[in-house]
Image (cartoon, rainbow, N blue to C red; front, side, top):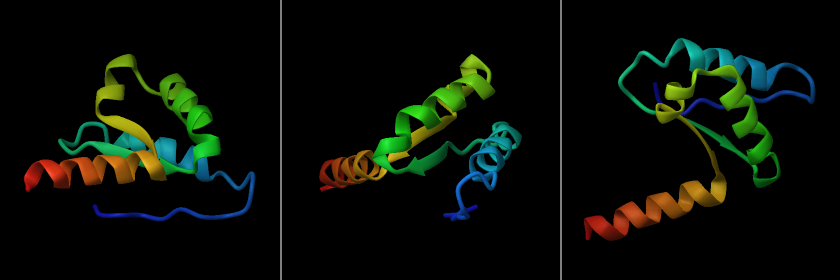
Length: 80
């Protein structure tokens, strides 16, 4: 699956939906990224750690927009 946007008002269950989806898809070979604004990254990382088994963290990761951009530019720089 490609990029998937989940949106809704505060308290509507967006995070819970995402974590359930991540838990279901951990058996797939692809890594799972959850992109979140800077101010919520720590909270989302804590929730991810609490909901998943310890070894599952290798397959799922919370990224902020800035960290994702840095990673993309770093990869592109290496490719040149």
